[in-house]
Image (tube, rainbow, N blue to C red; front, side, top):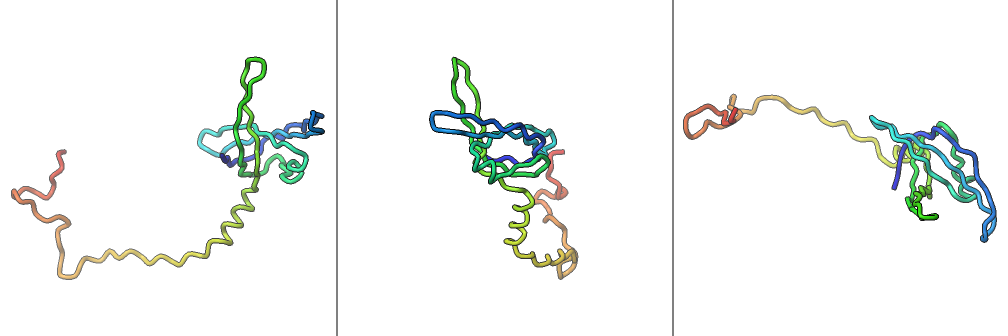
Length: 135
């Protein structure tokens, strides 16, 4: 899944030691630019990804993420983990370079057809007006 928006809050990094070794995670709040903006918190797990993404407050990002849930002591918790982050301006620059400049569109001709004026609809069979609308 993807979401595009502005990073409005960078939460403090968390770290610890598990059976597999040391770990680091960071949480971020992103806000969309819809008519009714939505906020979502997502996590980036791993010191290498934290350094690679280098997310800062105020940045416009496209965040690709997975949603999962887990149970702990009879309660369920959602987990939203980012697996890719792209800067919006970098994506726009790449798209602008990949799309060639469009040729100008010729103007629409509005001249009357050759052979004189013609009614927009042919006359009806029963002699009534061309308007067969019920209102």
